[in-house]
Length: 307
Image (tube, rainbow, N blue to C red; front, side, top):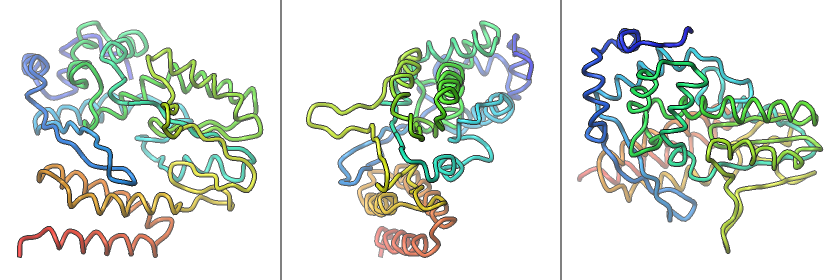
């Protein structure tokens, strides 16, 4: 797709007049509904979700469909990419003797608007005004919001040039398999640990860092070898094909239990949508477990209905 250099061209792709796009961008905070979702094994964590209101959400969906989804991504990227999934990501690491997994600290909040603008301007070669307006329409409070239709594809594009391309080249040189599912990075093969620093350096070029352990905390950087359970995006990959891990099943059950604590209808609906998607994913791998989880979700939702 040719670079978008004029606001008129951008407006035609988004089916929205330039002046209306500017009005929304100038007061973008007013076009979001924000709420917290409880998660974690012990239900002791919260994640702030920013859900765009109808008009902005429709525009963001057009940004995704008519513009950003048409830009090719690295074969290493599996999250938020059509035709790829947690399963396709995990399949790349089946039956390897060593697996390294890590993730990015505070991923979406750490992708700043300046980085997004530079991606549109320098790497996609969009016009200055186009890059500025697209940045305003896809960021909130100076960073990429979690909950917007454009957030995952914007994050993928931000990392495409600095992380995916660089680490893929290093991986080929060291006979290592590399994939990324949004902010989850996996490396496998005998030499996989040798690429950890390369991942850290490439992330730093975007102002991002690996999620290492704080004092007294648990590290998100894991190195598993031999017969230990190798887990990639919630799937175990030791036995010739990916299968849903017990850890992932327990997390879904914890998420279902957590819906009882939803503080608003919007938070409840968002949590249930997420859980239904996770159960659908589980069904393709472990139908029996998926049926059990669906029953638990249905029973839980029944208790929330007025008698």
